[in-house]
Amino acid sequence: MKKYLTLLLLLALTITHSIGAWAADDIDRSFDRPFYKSFTGTITTVEERDYLENGKFISLEAQDGSPANFVVSQNTFVESSVSLQPGETITGFYDATRPMIMIYPPQYTIEVITRGEIQEGENVFVGYFDNNLISFENFLQISLGDETVVIDAKEQPFTNSLAYKKLLVYYGPATRSIPAQTVPVKVIVLDHYFKGIDNANQLSADMLINNELFPQQPIYLSDDHMVYVPLRFVAETLGFPVVWQGASQPILLGENISLKPNSGYYTNAEGKQIQLRDVPDIKEGTTFVPLSFFREVLNISNAFYSEEKIKMHSQNTIQ
Image (tube, rainbow, N blue to C red; front, side, top):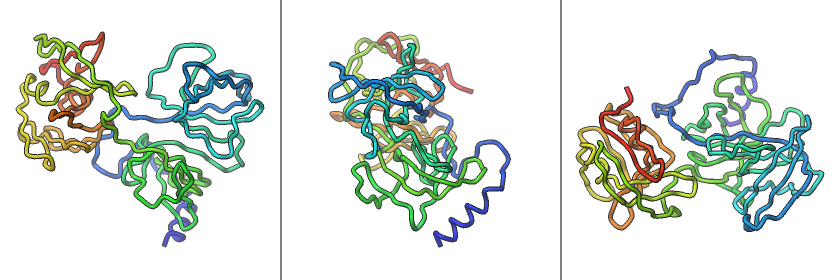
């Protein structure tokens, strides 16, 4: 069956679908989520920096002479064939949605490094995939074949679901559709998509809600700068009653809005399911939600954290 699917995909290379993103499910994909860009260059220098624990600062030069610097940490995945030595050509993948310092040469915080010299017809892609194995930016859909190698970052066989995980995908031919469809040669499972606040820092911040100031309320700030706020306090201050139904049941806000701890799926007032990267989490009996919940699920347009203050107003909604 899988070999038959492979043949169908290869035959479809000449088929062109109408241009325009399509989704295989009814989950809203319009919100911010990580997607990856890359830079390929030859290493010129490799330095140790005091502020990079077990990391490296790597300078490179692209084929056209363009320079760049890679910040490589102990959490960066480095393909086993890469040695990170001067003269080696590598490709670094970085999350293009994260803030970058404005500097020349450009400096990238690298999450994945692969060999830069690849064979003709070989392609490499890094991204998160949904439960239909479509990348979040709707660029690539993968279907596993009989000969597809699936391993984890430690090169051990991986047999669990690939949904909502960061994948390093090596593939050859793909259809000319949107998304492109392919049967990959190899998939390396790098990370999970949904994130909570286990590694976040607890802070305090003033909250300005409906023009009323609430000094020094508890918040969490994650390592990737995601802000979490106490659900009940903020939602009920905005006028959304919160109903707790038990640890295994959805939390309700009004008639249709719902969410569950440790789940990236939310339901908005229209009953539409929305997926967010960051999940509700419970700390010391209090449910915290990402600030994006108020923008993407409750449609409050100005829910932001700036100048060490949370600001939002229930009358400023997205139409």
